[in-house]
Length: 313
Image (cartoon, rainbow, N blue to C red; front, side):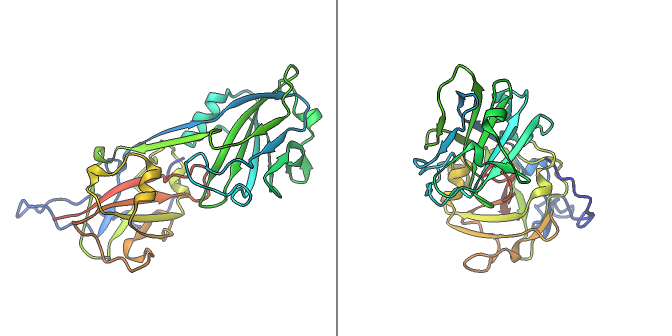
């Protein structure tokens, strides 16, 4: 998904930080900084989930009582950390194409023949508990052979994203009537090569504006994801950039300080307005700094863009 907003705010902001024509030395850094593709390295994302064959017509039991670690490796309480479940039936899309579409946030909606949800009361539920606009799923007439691939997603709510995922295919020959989710059921691997990107050199102090209206795709390759950015995070690390891990999940857990907030107009933010345990004083040269753009309403628990910031000059 890409930046589809038509807002014209901050279009005139400088893109990058040119050198001074007089001195030949680097400029002191931008105070109004435009993020371009060279600052935003692409992510390598792999989403894996099982494809199980279940008895056609059965009111399948979904059980996640053993799910104490989610697909991103985050610890969780199965009794309280699943906010709701989503059921989507894809008429003709192959299972691998479904997973690849989720991983790139480019899942085709035209192939969805049924979409329903359910808020659980415990750590299990049944197909018949899913409903859409007051209409419930009827297993003996809906969950039939040839109806397509049934995707069941366990969601953690805003700011959490997917907890687990499985794909089911109804078959007249199958006898299984339950689907169990545990820490090995699904996995999400996401990495970024920070060294492949050009750092965004910024001016000293907190009065720095960052704008991403110049990007037409996010790091997942989506041409609409940037329009969904609802949180900006600035993280400080106590190790050099080349010692940071490639894993996006590890990067989040290793942050020693974080400032975050909502973008002011959907495509820009003033870094000094981000909130943390202390006010943000500006960049320094003793730490590594990463700026991340997030969509807390989206499925994948990873940012849409990650940018290396450095103090220019």
